Length: 178
Image (cartoon, rainbow, N blue to C red; front, side):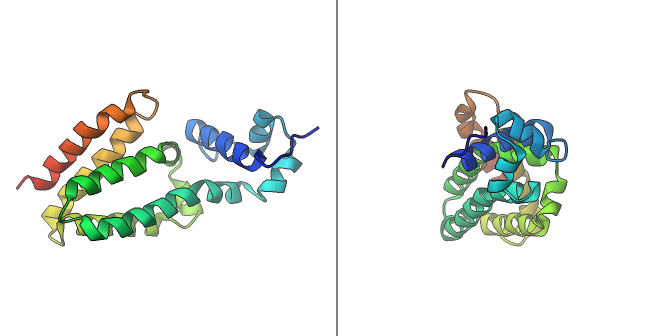
C-alpha cells in the first residue's frame, strides 16, 4: 500500500536529489526513487508526471534563489565585493546537492534549457563585480568558480561552513590582483 500524505512530494524531491547527486540523473530511474520511498511508481507519478518534471521541481529553488541573489548583487557588487562573494558562497552552499548532481550530469542543464540562462547569469555577475574589462572578468570567473568548487569539493564535509571565510578571502584576492 503506497504512503500518500502531504509530505510525499517533498520526500520524493529529497530522495531524488540525493540519488541524482550520487548516481546522476540519467543513471537514476523513477522506479528506484519509488522503491527507496516505499511507494509505487503510480504514487510517484501522482506527484510528478515525468523524471523531467521532477528534475524541474528540484532546479526551481536554485533558479529562484539565483535570480534573487543577482537582484541583490546589483545594488552592492562594486561597493561591497566581500558581501556579494559571501552571499554567492552561501547560495551555492544551500544548493550544494544540486551543484554536485549537475557536475555528475551536466546534460541536465540542456534537458531543462538552462545552459544559456546560467551562462548569462554568471556573465552578468562577473560584470557586476568587476566591469567589462576581459582581464578583470577572467579574475571574476576564477573567483566565483573557486567558491563554487569549494562548496562542491567539501559538500560532504561536516565542517563545510568553516571554509567560507578562507574561500571568500581567496576569491577577493583573485578579484583584486593586478
